[in-house]
Amino acid sequence: MDIPVFHDDQHGTAIVVLAALINANKITCRKFEDLKIVMNGAGSAGIAITKLLQLAGAKNVILVDSKGIVSKSRDNLNDMKIKMLVSTNPENLSGGLADAVRDADIFIGVSKAGLLSREMVESMAKDPIILAMANPVPEIMPEEAKAAGARIVGTGRSDFPNQVNNVLGFPGIFRGALDVRARRIDDSMKIAAAEALARCVTDDELCEEFIIPNPLDKSVGEKVAAAVANAAVKAGLARV
Image (cartoon, rainbow, N blue to C red; front, side, top):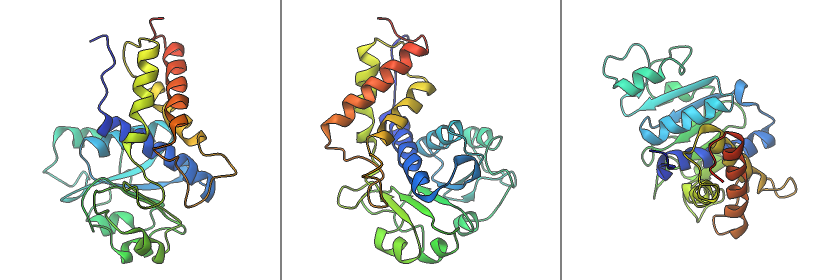
């Protein structure tokens, strides 16, 4: 089809996660290419997040599903997980979530409540970043993650700081695509949306408790829309 098709729970979540990590990396002085990232949840959202983080420069992403680390030693992987092995888990780690998160810089969860323990967080690298987005109960509660040494914690909930939720992304993304009558939404438009979201938090505002703008901030949609529209024009996808 020559119209933009976009799944907000999949790609929208990926864009907001990337935006959150762009700002989290500023605080912790990290670069995507140096990070060990554990992606807990290897369904549509988890794979979309992984692909977008790789476009941003991530080299070491480890996918974990309900049966453990997605590795070459597994014989129960679906076609998509087999394809993802080409670019993930470069050390071919095997085992469970506890094995994956050891010495990891970042944990991202789009899975189930309570899967990340305090002991697992304690085994991560110094000042780890935790984005536990299972709803309504995250993979680990923010206060428990903080007590275990987490530097930055985000969830999918509005009653905790750093709500990492796709609602931040898709209104502006659709608006920008429609404003220029884009033929589709490509990777450059997703990256532009994430970068615009990250810029919505100023350097003066940026801190461990505020790495992503509030979903009720009406200026966010406008800024994301403008960035997406501009990226569509540059990519030759606009019809205006």
